Length: 350
Image 1 (cartoon, rainbow, N blue to C red):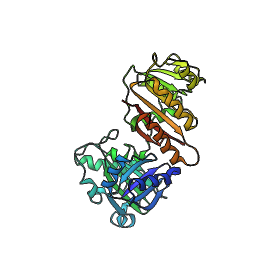
Image 2: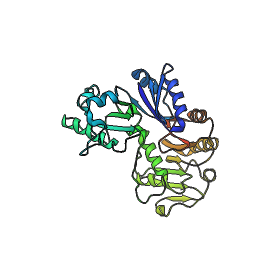
Image 3: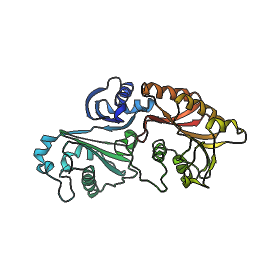
């Protein structure tokens, strides 16, 4: 079994993707909005998902163990009592042994989500700390930031689900595929989190001093992330940029279309092109087709596509299909920090 997470409004689309990856999959239950349990063959599902990567699913958790909470509570009287002395009240030693026994020597982390009506006192942090402390005392290495294996735990009013997997299987190293980043000053906009997440999810890194073109840059959140990565940034937008970027970027006050008309593709090449404009996806595709002329030989594009209220799945897959005719598609995903949009990463065809 697996537990699949998506944006709540994309739950049905995520289900469609599950059945596309594994037609024999069976829906079992909804744990919470956007969090659903399915019966699948885990190994077969994972292999198929590599061939048909989903766009709207943002996290997959294998279920290696299911404990019924009432039965578990009888053997652990502290379970339903208020947590004491910074502990969750769970006894993980024997109950989680089917999961713990599969651990290797690689660094691990524990990720807990709680979907209980009366969970004010029981927190994910308490559960994470209890499991981590037990495993560290057993000689395992904890690495919360860059784990190589993840113990995922979900607690509901009636059940405890647990599983062990790699970040690659989970599609994210964050609990539920929901990264939480701290603001870095000067904070310009929440769009900063979007680009940071895209770079992390798709494994994108930049060479310092590379050239970057940020289309529709205002107010400048993406330009800031590119600058912090050591790139030389040209920010294109007729609107005003944040004062925090003054003297740090080349600001061209023009639309993307105007910019491309006024420069020479022979004289101007960029290693990185980004686009987060709030425009129709057809218009965005036209701009990205034009942008290909100005992308260096091993260049990369990170772009978002705004989705319509209806037919979001069809629109997203159609956009990716069209772009695949012009670029090598590195990946496409509705990220946690995306709203009604999908992030796509493209490489120039070699």
